[in-house]
Length: 634
Image 1 (cartoon, one colour):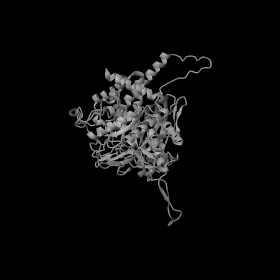
Image 2 (tube, one colour):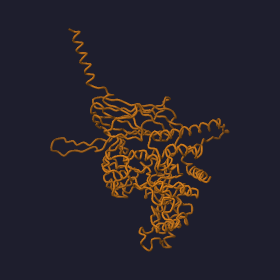
Image 3 (tube, helix red, strand yellow):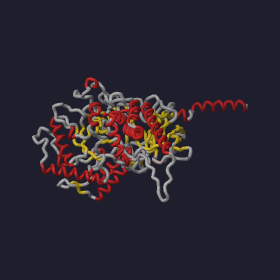
Image 4 (cartoon, one colour):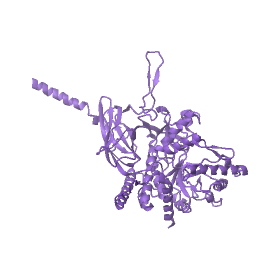
């Protein structure tokens, strides 16, 4: 009888094991690269482990997909261990950030969209409020007794807890910042997901740290608009103390993504009625702290208020500035440039002179403004958002007035760009809406049906990573975008710029943190990929510094031969980046071997070791431009 009872008990135990699946069956974890996206109802895919590689002072990201293959799950906690190298070195704490990917709706497709309407993961809700350092609590209402007023706490948008229904996915985004003093080598750790019922499982994470460092701020020049529009998102008065605090958090977010933040006007010197500057000591100290804290490498000198031309060219005075105002404007530019030079900020200073001069009269305005600025400061560069060839050959030649040309991506022409660079000018590039090549493009018949990588949610994430690569291909040294915070229909539910067609995510890279209880921005997956493209450009600059432009360009050819034929395969980007790293390390090691052991310093003396640093960026930039001019001149 006892034997039969044991058999029956064993049978029930066996059945019970099948009725209650293991953690691995309940929670499925896979890893994706930062350039992939998985839909909420898409079949789960990815790798069994997360593997990333990065230089020192670089941020590298990966995703972990949490899926529920057998039954609905409620995730109550997600945690990332320290990443530990075999000698005990660790990357931990604030260097690792977790985000839950939120979904936004694409209701109406962007013109020429590559992906269909639907829900897209894009906003990255942080697990920890960056202002308080505390988790974002869910929205709750409590009452001590029925009928009494409810007490509300928490927020509508948060990272955990979250539910995943059977057959669905929820992706977690992970940023890993490799400190500048990190030891090169292989680091290992894991990400663990806990669900209700005491169930948990983990996925292994491996980080390879390469033995070279990226500079603090961006080498690739850039301008991404201002933050005036955030006042409406947060319902604050523009210029108020509250606005300034929120603005500074947006500036920090841009700097964290290797983009130069716009310099807040309240940090700049006052302008006197005669055009001279009044440098207020308190402001000046705040500006110095801003430049250092956010690693700002470009300085836009605001346009002089004394040299404003009418926006309407129908007015008879559309190109007229009074002699008195011309003198005030010249004094303003002279004083501002001297102020920058006194502080070591003048090397990459510029004036954003005019945006898209689309009429003959606008070309005339460019000549007037450029002449005035160059009379005041010949070396101060004037940027105009215009292609490197004339819209109409009968219009005036604006070349004497322009130092930095900035064509739309689809307006780009390699031959005229090379001519401008050989002449000593710079060329940047920019994108807006969905614009194909104009009829006056020198190669119109060849390129009129081609599309560059437009920036919108309903396109592959690689379109945000590739522009710095293509810019390098053409010798283009800067990237311009009209806004990161433009007005959209509804930021969290329909983030489309309507013009009147929907441009999903156009001019909109940061979500307002209001529903998360954050008085600042929430980043997007798109701006993370842009950051990675800006970091890729640092690899190109480092390799060019060691081996010349041709060595770097050979690798660029792997993913970005031109604006109309760039890769959309994330594997090719990672392979090209790894090839860059291999060559940088090979050249670094060869240099160390050829140099031999360091010399023994004389008594009382110290030998200082030098390596590429942000402080050498201005001179390095001149070298890059000189090399490119030599190349196209051959």
